[in-house]
Length: 399
Ligand SMILES: C[S@@+](CC[C@H](N)C(=O)[O-])C[C@H]1O[C@@H](n2cnc3c(N)ncnc32)[C@H](O)[C@@H]1O
Image 1: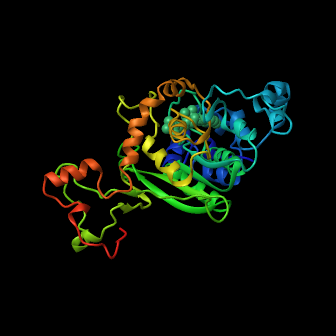
Image 2: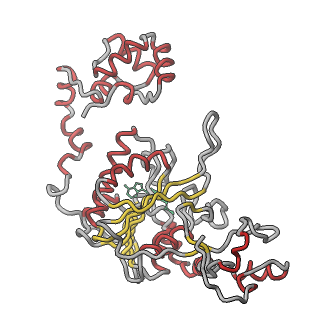
Image 3: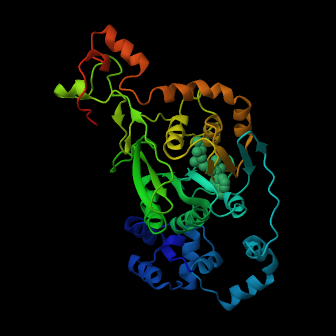
């Protein structure tokens, strides 16, 4: 499949194309004509494009799917090297299965240091109850594995579709699939998933993930897609949340009017907008240097919602291992993969018990209208709690 000229040159909008036209001295309309019709510019134009973009003539031609006799000869001379690079003979079915050895085996799970596609290919169909995936977001971040996080848009989506297809294959009927990503990618990937799985929710997690961008809104939420294989999930259980209160004065943040006495003492129904997931930014809490570690509160909520003890959880993108730690502590079986170094995950498992108190603290905060702490604070300040009302509750209001 050929890649158009602008995509090869990483030109994504008109103003970039105009500026490139000015630098190369080739008119914008001519560049656009070459792009739209997949025509290779003239030799002198290619030279000028190569000079400005740093992309060579051969790369330009190969990306555009144009192979001259001269290039054909070059390819033939370097056939062995190119063959190795492309690994065309390593497609599943042709290759002997690579022996996968786990780096860590615990009471509940196994961690592999490998490409997730390799591990997925070794997994049987319909064998996993819950998949949670937090892939790289293609934002040109530097990962310890030195993987390329700056793919051409089409390449990133094609790669995503490849591992998603495999995830769908290994998911049990009725199993749940969660995909954490920035909204830009999840708009495409939800379209892909809609044709293969059953949509449950687009959950918004209110967490800032970049600096403010001039001329744009400040990106402040992640998207968590939730799908199931087949019509209904095998298991679904949503926690109820405590009522939001002012962190300083402990007073009500919302006006529940005259209905306070009828509120469900088990808390407020969970919505698909999550305001209470903390970012893991403070070095004191981070389990590995660099960005991208997710809060165990998020993973706990997902595992609680769509799995039970003994179920199999798979996360193809290990990072610091948050999913595996929570799965282990919650007695779910798990399979983990990380393409980069896994030392941080191994170190985390050495001290896994140190994470239990925080997990318990999060868990104890659910399914009650006020946490134990906030109930005490409110009583001290003379504010109402669900215990203030001694009347029988004829109607429980669900907020
Ligand atoms: C966004 S981070 C995951 C963070 C993780 N959820 C956590 O809470 O720590 C993505 C991770 O996927 C890894 N990765 C990227 N491509 C991979 C692949 N093909 N197979 C396995 N892991 C991969 C990266 O090295 C990176 O550590």
